[in-house]
Structures are given as C-alpha cells and as structure tokens.
Length: 258
Image 1 (cartoon, rainbow, N blue to C red):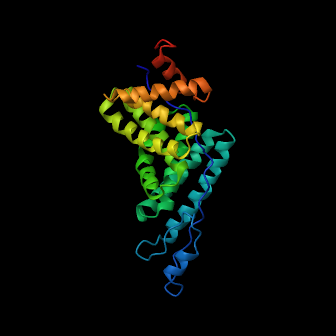
Image 2: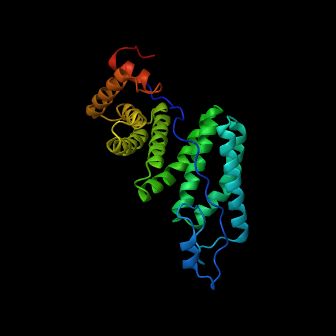
Image 3: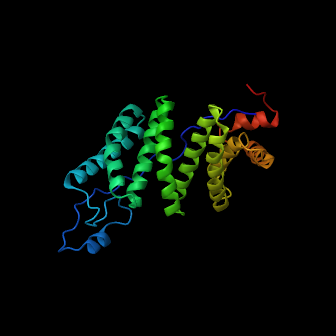
C-alpha cells in the first residue's frame, strides 16, 4: 500500500481580513441597532452586554487584525518567517475573542483561518510538527464553521485538507484507529464538494487524497476501488495532483512502492 503523504498547501491562503472590533453599544444606542448596523461579514464582537469585550480586549483584537493582515501580505510575498511571526502575534487575542464569544461564528472563522494560514507558513519553513499542532487546534473551529455555513465551500475544502493531513500524521505513526475517523469525515465532506462541482479538479483531488488515506485504515475494499477509479481517470486526463500521483501509480502497479 502507498504511504500517506503530506499535501502541499494548494488551497487559497489569501483570506479576507475581518473588520476592526468596535466598543459595545451603550444602552441609549441599543444593542440591537448596533448589531444590525454591523457588516454581515465582519468578525467583530456582538454588542450584548453579557459578552461585551473590554476596551483592552477590543484593542488587542484590533491589533490582531492588523497583524493578521501584515502576515497575509508577507506570506503572499514569500516571506513565511515574517508571516508566521505576525500570525503568532495575532493568535492570542483571536483566541480570547472566541473564548469570550464562542457563538460568534465570524470570530471562530477568523481563528480557524489564522491557524490554517500559520500552518501554511510553518509548512513552508519545514516545521511539520508546528503544522500538525496548528491543524489540530484549527479542526474543531473549522468543524463549527462548516456546520454553521454549509454553503461555505472554501472553508469546507480547507477543512477536508486539514482532516486528511491530521489523518496522515496519525497513519505515519501507525495509529490507524485514530486516523480512520479523520479520513472518514474528510471523505464525507469532499464528496459533498465534488457533488456540487463534478468538474472541479481541486475538489476531486481532495476527495482522492482522503480516499487514499482511508483505504489504508478501513477494511472496506470499496474505498480502495473508488480511489483507483478516480485516480486512473485523473491520471488519464492529467488533472491529478503531484501529491496524489505516486500513490495511484503504486496502487495501479505502474510504479513500485518505495
């Protein structure tokens, strides 16, 4: 059987920066009016008095937005060391915001994306232990985002990649029992993306990666057959990713296992 491989970060890394947080509305203004006037996509704290952030927390959150944006700019320019440092500086305040308001899905999305972006920067620096640590922390946040935003295909596909990488990490340590549910969840979500866009090669490669992994942890031979069927078709039409190609070549016998 092919060995699980760590995939390259081919998913989108340029993530829209959230809006700066604003102080909670005063009773005279009304919390409802303040919430209604906020942009729908803004990752800012709700105006509820029970969950309002302190001025210090708001200042820290706003600095985190600035640091995150700077990290994105550095990462797009290939400066992953600076990007990682900026993300590391931003993460504590974002974590605090999510702790204070766990149901604020915009802030949960922000945290998940910041962790993913930092993982990508760490991966580019060759720090795979940090990649796995970031992914492990990000997974429950992405799971919450995907459940809350079923039409958010970008978050869903990033989560598929995260789950597959976590499965690969466990499989590399021969923890098949730990890897299998991660692959299973990845396969389930990837199938949804492929069903929505059957011609999307990126989505098919995500599904293929998850199937290759689960075919090594599950006794269900249909998973291997499905991986082979998809892989052969993608080899034939040239849409298979470089990360999946060696595994499919090994599974088809076109290439000996190393």
